[in-house]
Structures are given as C-alpha cells and as structure tokens.
Length: 192
Image (cartoon, rainbow, N blue to C red; front, side):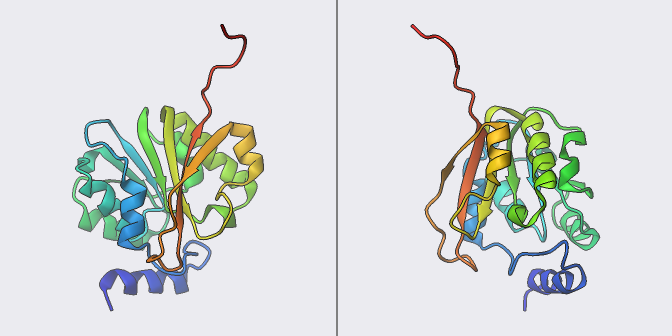
C-alpha cells in the first residue's frame, strides 16, 4: 500500500467530515484538472490539496512551487504537502476563507473539494471568494462523480457562472468529469 493511500485512508477514518472522497484522485483526473495551467501566467490557487496528487499535476505543468497556493484544512495533509513540495505555499485554512488569501489575479482556482456535499452557504462563500481572486474570465476547475454540475444552481445563477465539461475520466475511482466554470463576462446592453 502506498504511503499516500495509507495516509488518505487513515485521515478518512479519523476525520470523515473533512475527507469525504472514496479514494485519492487518479493521475488522469489530476492531469485533466491541471491541463490549462500556464507556467508563465501567474499564481494558481488549489482547494483541498489532500495528499498532493493534483498539486503534483499542477507543478508538472512547469508552474514554480512559489506560484501555487494550496489550501488544506487537514494538518496531516499540510505536513505531507510541505515535506513533499519545497517552496509550495500551504495555507491551513477552510476553503470558505479563500477571500482572505493574500493572492490576487490568479490564472485558475483548481478544486479537489467535495463541493456538492457542502451546505449552500459554504459553497457560496467558496465561489464568491474564488471569483474575487481570479482574473476576469478565468477558470474555477472542479471535478464531480455525478451527472450534474458540481455547484448548486442557486450559486451558479447568483454568480453568473457558465461552464464546459471534459469527457468522462473512466480510470478514476469512481469515474469523474472535470467542469471549468467562469463568470459570464459577455457584454450586455444595446449592440450595433
């Protein structure tokens, strides 16, 4: 059993309210989550970094560790992230506090959070903070196992979010799909 899987399962049993995934993300899912990261385009914020599978995929895109800000509540996961990725900015806070993070103009926010299992008020806080940290028109990347968008319709409508989806990633356990949300910044009003 790998050290990451052992740590993941231990934390799942000790802190089931924090770790609600069935298994760590697959490499294929992590690659898809990080696929649009540009190493020359500024900071990236990661939510729910866990054992670092998606963190590694983001860094493998060439982003300097100093440009990645990983938010994780679990202290054991934070220690693992700091040990494994020198220079990584690890913030042991709730994703609901992303609005207070000292990062501006992020190129992307990439989330491994179980968003649909969270109360709507917390989803709203996470997405409102995310929108404040992203450059206009940039992506909030979120995966889901289910057939519906992983953000409730009330939050999507309130923040004017539009999205696109990846093909299903069958080799993840369970199979997942990646959503890329952004605010609809299409100009409104008279044209022509």
